[in-house]
Image (cartoon, rainbow, N blue to C red; front, top):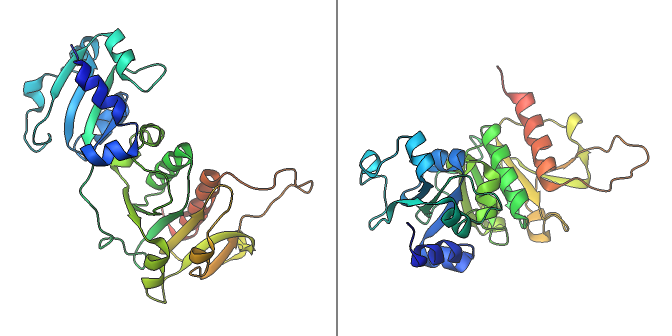
Length: 265
């Protein structure tokens, strides 16, 4: 049985200010919860009896102190009706969890001179952000650096859209123009523009940083000034019925081309 206070806590975590205050966020669904467990400390595991039995989960099976927050709520057995009242999903998937937000991170381990990194400049849509995190995971990109105007990666909609990839990609919120300006001059900073050079005809390094901009306005002027390579994803439709690409789709195309050129299988 789940208490009203716990349901209230879960619902409060829909808002960023509450996530920051409580230092907690919510994940839902068997795959997402499984993938996130271990990367993030558990505060509560909320699941139906059927799921707990099928997965042979008992409090004693996951009682390692390194797995839980300092004062965890533990394993909470709920009915289907209780899960529906707690979940953010229209169709709950038997299990959800409250995890601790990671500690304030640093970009000390982010080195675009030695690896490929994605930077997001004002990406606002939670679905787009979650999909981009999933794309980064697919292409083996370990870090995404975000401007402070980018959506919160721990929004429940973002977490759900990542399908567990948030466990494999570290997200950093920074002053993006300052960070880009601080990189060595030899580091390639790539951005997509309508007046850029055809990506399929442009040399692409194995390492560097790929900057993707806001859904409506693209890359901001301040960030634009740091770009060293302006890329264009060409339009192959002569009627030009579409005037732009979704930012997540564009990110996928760019990451794929970088990996295709530079990875050996």
